[in-house]
Amino acid sequence: MKLYYKAGACSLSPHIALCEAGLPHDLESVDLKTKVMGGGGDYLAVNPKGYVPALQLDDGQVLTEGPAIVQYIADRAPEKKLAPPAGSLERYRLQEWLNYISTEIHKTFSPLFNPASSADWKEAAKALLARRIGFVSEKLGNQPYLMGEQFTVADGYLFTCLSWGQYVGVDVGQWPNLAAYLGRVAGRPGVQAALKAEGLMK
Image: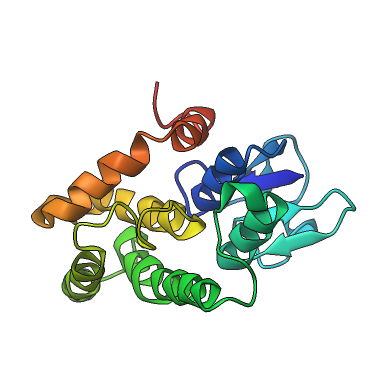
């Protein structure tokens, strides 16, 4: 498999999933402004949507959209328990989290990275993020991970999104349990492997 990524972007989530699953994979960086891949070539020929992540499967097919990709990865290594079994209520709980992170947290960060966003828009986004992250903090409570004792692909996605806070003035430290959670996730060997591969830690 080959993961198309940009360091530190939402593609870090499936990268973490691949490392946690122990699945062999190649990496191809993408310049999201020019749509040129690190090894040369037009990324739009791979993914016409133009954004990351995209996962090229061993048969040449390309899968896009982070929540779909991470579930695909999890199902390739069921013994790692990165996702509950398909069809179980817990699997739908996982999808519930993936959808919430995708639509309510990930997308709400977007204006904070957009240089065209007005100051008022950015402040509104920060206020909305505070409410939505506060909801996650309440639901997480003192559990190790979102689904309880077991690390899942939802944790890799949440970790990725919350890590953006340090770059855009969203202090996750105001929720002590989430700050501890980020440290816990960051300490996992699979997460560290992904971060090192993307040049995000020494």
